[in-house]
Length: 274
Image (cartoon, rainbow, N blue to C red; front, side, top):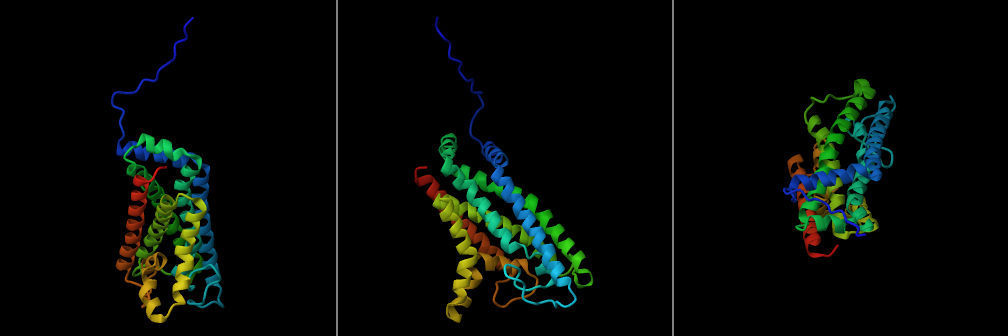
């Protein structure tokens, strides 16, 4: 008796397209519990800290501009308080970006992905498109509602979304967090190691700015505005700070960081074996 081995039928129009790569990356994203947990944690932390700092500022004994508690915004003004969760939320979404890449290297799934997409770069581009799209879809309403909730808590001390520069700062905060997620993804693709990439994210966003502030003033004033976190702060605040770039220049610098890191990650993906 001869056994018949079933054969898979491949559709005649089956081929790798951009939308099919993006759809595959979307399926990976929503099927991973860790992705959903990290995204939910980012939202919860941002909302909780924003409302908490707003309640703190609403206290009659606290004056606007008072230094915030450790881990909070640089100063407790109505905008900074309601958006004060950005400092911790950036670490969570940066971690999400790292895990979406390094998780595939640790499990070996990346080899299947690259075998299905031999040109390789669409895999990374698809991951960036999914992460950026999901992050913006979730974070724009999150940041907007947190701002409105924080101003409601502040009452008479609050500001309006229509005040000069406020809408730009609110939308800029959602854009900055999305950019940090993409930055984490680029570092994950470059280093292919979870611990190394996470350490790099923390160092770039938190440690390096502190180290630069210890340099001679002429060096610090030259370097500090061009670091990712300070470039983001330029378009997430409404008060003019002489130590920061203009909002437009800050956005351009942050985009420049992402372009350089993603370019280096793409070259690494094409030239190194998985």
